[in-house]
Length: 154
Figure 1 (cartoon, rainbow, N blue to C red):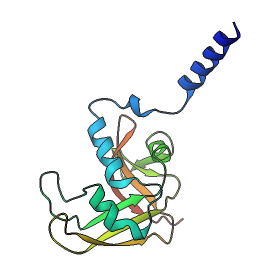
Figure 2 (tube, one colour):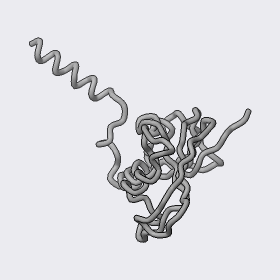
Figure 3 (tube, rainbow, N blue to C red):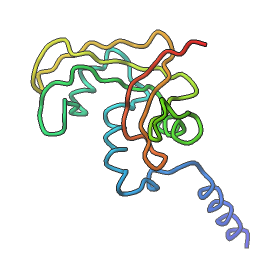
Figure 4 (cartoon, rainbow, N blue to C red):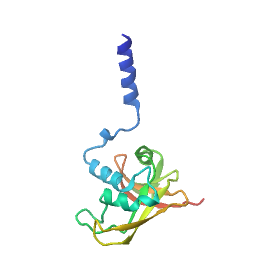
């Protein structure tokens, strides 16, 4: 009986936990996974731009190997970024899909210094000096596109 109660409690905890990766709708999953690969790395810093851009094979467009001119990494957990699409953000510029975060995030921008074609792309990183409010496109409550970041002033 005690084991059964423990199993029920564990099941309740798992069911009530935050959004799980398995919950991503099939039609949204490719965009969400690309967003994560290109823009989310909690431990990113400005010195890792070359290695991360290469390791993650981040290029301009889906079918070519042109070096991407600029790419931004959000240095936060997936969980925190997902929240922007689910109450921790507000609609941006009247778009039903675009949300701006309610709280600032730290970001690292990787800017192309030299090279034209992958893998010969060299980047210089710059960490945001101020927190940035991120703008993301959301599909069914999942971030699928990084549209930029802004510094808000009141």
